[in-house]
Image (cartoon, rainbow, N blue to C red):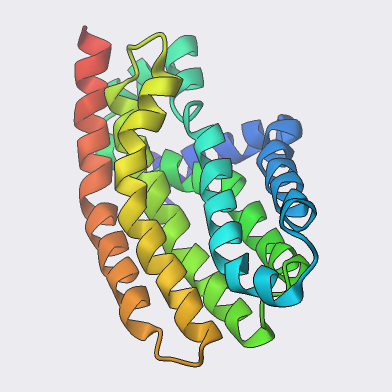
Length: 228
């Protein structure tokens, strides 16, 4: 890998963000702990009936993962803005959109991948049928980066706000609804033995679209926020 190239810069930025996240391992564990606690409380609240738990398992696990991701989105660019790293990224010769996309990738690895790993365990706690578990994992692999990309745009838009956490949640909630509908529909179809490819295909199409547009929009929003 040639030093100074865009690929080398993105790799160095990814390595830096992952190293910083590893030094703050407690921040990585918090969303996972939140998901485990919320999922564990559902059988106590609704009762231990296996049929009821199996019917709601897919939706409960997915919504819990979504809420856990929302807890960490507010910190996506905050550290770089506070320590001045964002100005250096804007002055770098590499395209800012690619550097922002690299930061989103690092955030997805540290915030969403642990949740995807623990999701089958949470689903088994709620008696989700075994054939539906792989579908749940596939849905999470598509929907979590989609939500991180959408959230990154909104985080960049609210970067200059002091109460960005509440504003971010209000702005992201309508965008989460279609994702939740398609994801829960795919898992429910798999539980009933029905075709589930169509909602997964819609999630994949949305992921491809946001993968192209979200880094560009986030970079533009960050430039506006840093100039004000």
